[in-house]
Amino acid sequence: MIASETPVLAVLCGDTRPPDMRAIEAEAVVRYTDAAGLADALSGADAFFVYDFLSTAVPGAWHAADRLRWLHIASAGVDPVLFPGLQESDVVLTNSRGVFDGAIAEYVLGVVLTFAKDFARSWDLQKQRQWKHRESERIAGRRVLVVGTGPIGRSIARMLRAAGMSVAGVGRRPRADDPDFGDVYASAELSRHLPGADYVVAVAPLTEQTKGMFDAEAFGVMKPGSRFVNVGRGELVVTSDLIGALRDGPLGGAAVDVFDTEPLPAESPLWTMENVLISPHMSGDFVGWRNTLVEVFADNFRRWRAGEPLRNVVDKQLGYVPSETLRQG
Image (cartoon, rainbow, N blue to C red):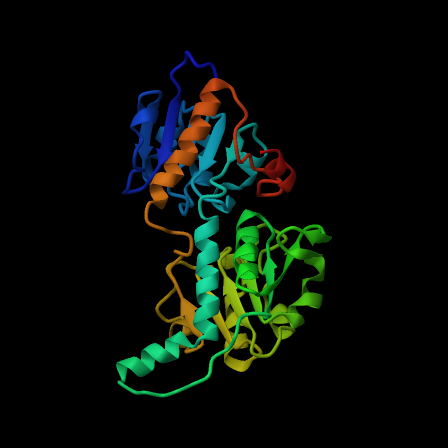
């Protein structure tokens, strides 16, 4: 990007505009749009900020992106914008890696403690004004398998290890002596390692290889009474198979923050299962997260204007920022 030019920036934001955009508005012609007006906003745009990262409107409006050079999405996952038109283009794709890592790790620790300490039952008994003594579980020494070894998975591993849990990871490449996981097993060998885990945490990116990876076969080999936590993508899981594993075993419980259909339909059996904790895609959302997303974009916008290397460049074929790039960054 030549700094003397005034770029045109399209911002997909739906009903709510991103906060604190004044500095960027001073440097660019900014076109705020919802899904209906996206094609018009993309025509002649140099850069594209997908602030509404749950929108599925980008592929349908892509034909209008006649001079686009850079697309930034305000999330770590890029599956809403990862389609052949973008993958085959020269448009650089960046994401918001790092914003949600700590918050999601805290969420995972929170649900682990909720299961182990039987908080849900305590709340129910409190409402009934019943004093009923029970024993709870220790989490120290419990085995956790984190499926997905990117930055969020690493943050989860560090948090759980600090709490005394034994953590291993599942990723594309097996390795030993990993600083956060210790052992990392190959994704192709997932079924070999599921039976030994007390908790399985899904945080893998959504790709053709990971879609539906947690199905009846995977749940069927899990340890009786184990718990499943999904903070990755809803489509990592075959929901009907999850329901079956919760109802008939072997799963002892699940905490689910993401679903293949959102909002979760009111008729879903998951709503009424006593061993299920549901949250509405909010595991990474903390007070001030929207401002932080804009700060990440603003830093890359400055770099783009100055011709400097961008942060969080996504490999469009893999669907995430490669670990080699993370080490260089």
